[in-house]
Image 1 (tube, one colour):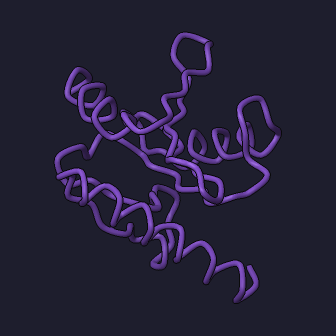
Image 2 (image 1 turned 180 degrees about the vertical axis):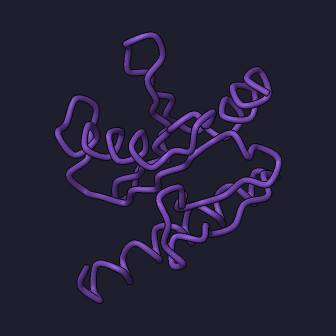
Length: 125
């Protein structure tokens, strides 16, 4: 991966970590820089069963190939027992959360995304 792509990925991960912390969800960047098959981009200490793939991509949208690829990456890299999710954002747009549930793509987006993320995560604990 090129240096520019790594910097963009790191910036997106830090943006997500700050957004989660702003909503009282303690998160930190994952250990992906150490490598390994089960390295999430962002880790939420209270939700170790969640594998978070972070994407800050302008071309990502509902139904896009980019979102499908991100979901596949999260599913591929998630440890057994973890729920693979993608938290993603386009420029000047709110964060969105996407995952598969029973064969369906589910996405939560908008200003209430953090609140709904907390509720959804606690229900799956």
